[in-house]
Length: 613
Image 1 (cartoon, rainbow, N blue to C red):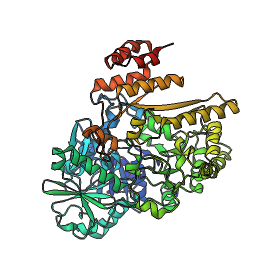
Image 2: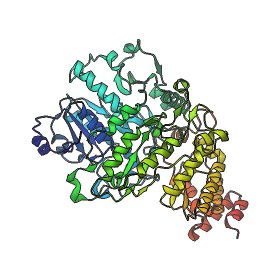
Image 3: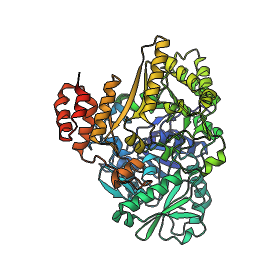
């Protein structure tokens, strides 16, 4: 079904549709872009497809008389609240806790159009203005803050976002299934069903992937649940916070998890288990919704939206990631099990994009969270359903993983047949560690060399980005990333393919400084490695703790919850800046300071390796 209308964002647009009232109003910290890469648009179109009237309230002003929150009126069912495609604090602040000067999700890239802790601010305003209308939280900020969590920007443990926001319900993870189940619940129990004291909690407990507050745990007697350490216990004991994280992560890694509850004084936050991943037909249905693939025309005079410009000609072919990196929120939010679209659905999107009036011939990305996981899953899926491990490829590739790259090779060939498509790039990064399994026969069977050759020759744009993250085995173990030896193997393969085909292409490695487990000496060793491979980094990411990741848990507690080992972490801004400095060792203005740091550490040997001629 092709749409001719954006979801309305003004009262005038609602009037043109002859709406007296919207059924659902989605409040978002991002500008409204009607594209399947923007969460508010996806959930809005999903709800619309079930016959509801959906309006969007993008980036409302929270600092004046709150007129923006009133202009669309009161919805019939609920307000949906999301901070946007990013956690609002990560969006607004750098790793050094300085305000960012731009915002990629705002017209003109201008900063300042969303508050700190946007989900909490929006929800509290709505509950004050409309106490009789339910508020449902969603998006990555709500998802990753659903339990007691460490907040880097306040350097404190915060309560579940359900407590601080005063919201009635929370939907976590990818919300297409649970939001429809919640609407069904409201249809059966009344539009005020989430507000009443005698709410049917047993019915709510049958809905997966939601969270709500109970004032006692008597209603949980019929449910198989796990009770976590209480918020108060975690405030007193970092080890109990770490123990909670391990339970939460292992439960999240299951195909479908158990209900978890966490006590706050006399109340309980209840988080039901996750749904099974969307199957191909269900995922195709999401991408076939009538997106206009454009920002709302209201923004034309305010400038381009950088995040949209970056992805407008990209295609997401799957969701989920089984990499399990310690610092990454993707698997915690999307799940570790990969859901893949059908080839037909992807080709249909290629057709739509290639016929857009401003299409210049380049598909900027044909990938996903990790580009080369399309259609990969367990050989025996029943074994996968019982597995609690965070990664299917670390510390080595699981023997039960089908990592066949042939479906991607076929897909690239099919996309190339479109006459208007001149270039197809893989911009979302690839897991090169899947190119070097211990079993050489599997490497041949799963066509990993053919895939690497195809991507390097035809789909890089001259610069292929990969993420070894570090060179120290100890740091990489904390990150759940493979040995740097595999990067060196891939670098050799990359150079061979380039030589054989007379290509002057670059391999661009990304690195992280100040990650838990990383010392100044580790950064010096990494600097020496960059010197050895003749690479001067253009940018280096300083580790930023984000809620509900293993790395953040280690950063806050100082221990690895899986091993109970203590882990060094650079916590001060000065220590972080010093670590970051080492990857710019080649800049003359940094030489004296780096030498002084290494002298203080009694590591003249590293000075010699880094600066000898």
